[in-house]
Length: 438
Image (tube, rainbow, N blue to C red):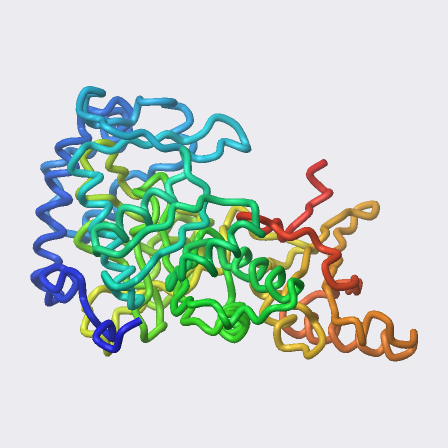
């Protein structure tokens, strides 16, 4: 990464707008979008039920009076019922994996794809990627939005793209080494899988040409960021997106790494109480809600992301005036409730990374004994601890259990497993096994 990349801005006109000018643009785009979606059957019904006329929206404060859109709305209108343009104007279709039922389907007009490339170019530039870089994409290509979003964003910058796709870790490593990639795109957990495999090959992961990593697709802690940066010798940056809105390109970190800038000229962010739906004041933690005010094919109004975060409106030293969102703690619908206590896997991850001897691989097993919920934390430890005498091993377990109890507010049983015992994911890591749902 060249020194000229520091705090470089891809689109200064929109990323550095004064707040009053930004809000005027947002209101204009919001009103136009509401008129365009008013003929979509789902929104026509929602607006009529709520007694809302799009022409009644005169201020951004009126946004909170509009009804929410949920993933269930997309599933009920599967596949194309939420589209705001005729199919002849849709040039691309993507969808979610659909592992819990029908997938959610999204479409893109030609302009949408062009906008998407620019949005990704914004956060890649913010992370330090330039036209001099070689970008290795280890996301799977297909209906999933991740690979294509980063691919076209990198090409928009002028970088060289290696469309490696997912899986086949040994081949990934060979290509990384031989092709001299300087930027890596994958999930943060897969970045660790790559580091592990390189070390098992008797080589140093830091010997790669990599300088920056652009990681997304799953929640990850600051401790995991430090682990990745140390193991691979790179700058690890976070970015955020979801297939229902646009894919990657909703927000991304600059090199200050103090939150991901949301591209507010395209997306109106709100934070709500996930239980009541009430909008929370700036700085409060809650569920992120997004309104897409630019997309043509499938603009969504007040879409409940289920991702838990908070927003910061203070000025960033990079020069961007856009609001910043913290790393997501997890999803409100993925949050574990154990004995009445809310637990996110990232909270446990933060504790484990602070304990010397714990490897950066773990799994949570939730079960029910009678009427009582139980939580077991299976954590890999180095060989010295795993093969240590029973008394020292018991002392180590007690120490970790006490640290977890202080952090999450309940007792979790800790089970030590030997190195490499936990299956390495070639995409998103499966952190939780909840046997209560079986």
